[in-house]
Length: 300
Image (tube, rainbow, N blue to C red; front, side, top):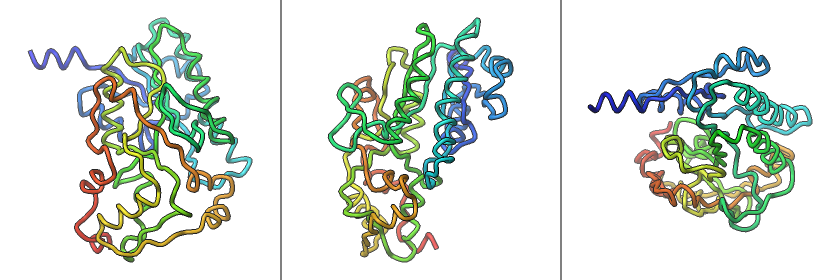
């Protein structure tokens, strides 16, 4: 009976961006729990025939593609960031809408960068920010919203994804072997984040809860500033020095992209807990207990 239930619940899940940090981990996770994962390669983004062939017979499509924002934003790179999200989502939705047998669900990624840097924002009460990132998220989500109305649509606004094996966190602890933790600027900016393990579980939760749709904030319930996070990292790795890196240095290194580090959005998850989701790492202390070694010397 158990094997029969497993077979009936198995889905064909197409992932756009399956080779990226989140996409590769999600592909592995979903495969391990019994789903069939179909990667959507870059070569077919603009080939509607091949794209439709790839999507035919899928139950779920997950759209994660996008060039990294952790890069200096020249005009040409801003175009790459925009096109890799907005234009690619447009082509993906066009192909989905033309299928004779459409998937049941489209999960399309966005980011908490949609929100204003002031105030507290959730899925029901929020204000869009100003500048490149909020406009990018707005246009990105607008393309996803063009999907056929008979397909369940979930737009996941990701916080910063923490993992010991990739993403932003290893960069945050690069100085740990020297016994130093860094705070950016005054450290007052809020970081809305989620552990990779919780993000994987949240995506599975969304797939398995057909009553859940619309905007979903994929962030922890915790509110933490960058300065508080630097202190938590120092405590977890048993080091005593926290240095402040001037915000001006990030502006010189990254230009307009420095706002990713020097500003923050306070995004709270309401829908996930509302529908019964529980976090493995609801706060930084829990996450660090699971990832930090006994001493920073283990990193050398």
